[in-house]
Image (cartoon, rainbow, N blue to C red; front, top):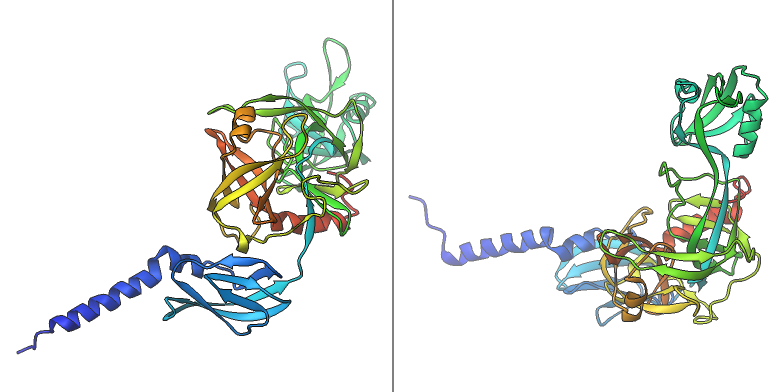
Length: 418
């Protein structure tokens, strides 16, 4: 006969099972396990530990553990063990305390004038009921780089090369999804004018308004937008031959509404005041060298960088220019964080709470992309996108991802504009 298991043993077994399941599946445990193997803080920067989590450091000189926070004290490295309720170890990781980096936050409205490398095909059309471009395999989004070995710098140059061909076949090199390709096409004579045509609509430049994210006084570089400049017709990222960042004035605002994003309307081509060049255009924004240091009247001495480890769900501010009053700080709430091991534009979800900004713009509108995000006295990110169905909400990118990209702008000679 089998002996029955006593009630105390059943309770103990169920308790152990429940604790084990909680350790595996609880949001707190999952959040701790999701932390990177190497965690970064700067001197004076702190990280709020999740409720119920204790941390033990291998050195008290580098890190301070008090009141549910981990704070960097001095440059160095420490081994940290995360425990639940001081009993159950969940994660071990290295914490590097780094030197504080100071940036001048942006918030200025800037004009962007960009000339592409090559010319982009934005559509194909017929010439005498057929399209030589389409027959040769070209399609929207392709970037024509050379014709018969000659580099194509503009739409005008492409037209000239086609007209001078006399209808002879043209050897074309182009890029599709950043991969080099080649083809041959034969122009046709336009029945109406007699001019030689290839049956393609092309674009070689673009212009618009955005917001400066930061100026780095250490190397005289800047970052802006927080997202790429894309071709309006094809959605493809525009390569850069040359470009200029210019002073812009906001002349009007189209308020954002549900299903209809708003827009800052600015003027900059008339003043022609160049602030810097544009060297690269990336998924995380545009970057280049400033002609002279940028200033921010709200933070004249700059602000330290806050890495993602220190960003918290809670109150923050964005710096933007939405009228003739210049840079102003507007209240927001960071409502969601996405801890990331690799760069992404959607690092956090933002909610605009500032009544003044809501009255002026309805929330986040086009042209505010790049507005720096300030939390706990640090620059932690930049605005990237607005929710189409709710302009009071949008996305932000961690500033560290933009800074990594900025380094390539500081050293790149190959790409001389963006």
